[in-house]
Amino acid sequence: MSAETFLLYFVIPGLGLAALMTFIRIFIGPRVEDRIIALDLLITTGSAIIATYSILNNNSTFLDVAMIFALIAFLGTVAFAYYIRKAKNK
Amino acid sequence: MKELAIIILSGTGTIFIVLAAIGIMRMPDFYLRLSVTVKATTLGVGMMLVSAAIFFGEVSTTSKSVSIIFFLILTAPVAAHMIGRASYFTGVPMWKKSVLDELKHKYDEKTSELRSTNVGTEDVNAPDDTNA
Image 1 (cartoon, each protein chain N blue to C red):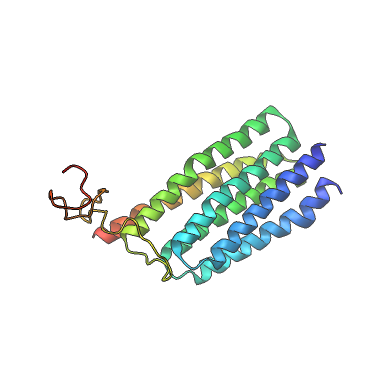
Image 2: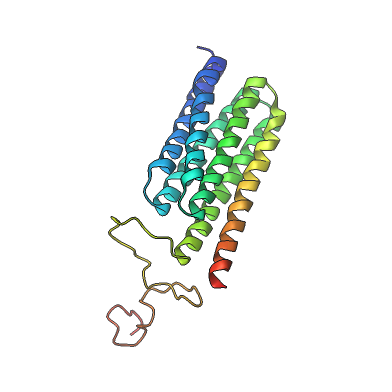
């Protein structure tokens, strides 16, 4: 089994399944905090998908996008935490 | 050899990410969901990026992957701690079968300062006051 076959038939469907389950949590999540961590997980899964895609296409330029995704996930979570805390104190 | 390393690393990383997604879908409580997702996802994405670095085998791609992994390992616990702390302060409920809340009455509500004794029992007669 070549690595390309494995990536196409195991890794990509597995990551897609993970993204689907995270979407279910974003949809049903009872509070806003659940949705925030689900969004964080979704963005991190997206950067894993980008790494796989760059292997499949033999194009390493996409890894820059993965770096930006990691940055956005961190900044988004921290900003949401800050504003949740601020809304409580008001 | 290179193909085998890529298969093992990306397969294990995928399994970790899928386990984190199952955890975020099935866990009953916000704190359990937070605890189950952050660590597993960081490890899984790190393994996928290592497999990408092995596949390309260039200095530029490897340094890019290593910097992403370093950034993830540095920031994921900080973000998880911040969101967990904010949710504890805003009163996100725990699971009804949880047996222990070790931070109960340990945080000062006004200044959000963590103490080792219960808030309001700082006199010398307090049973667990170590400074007495």
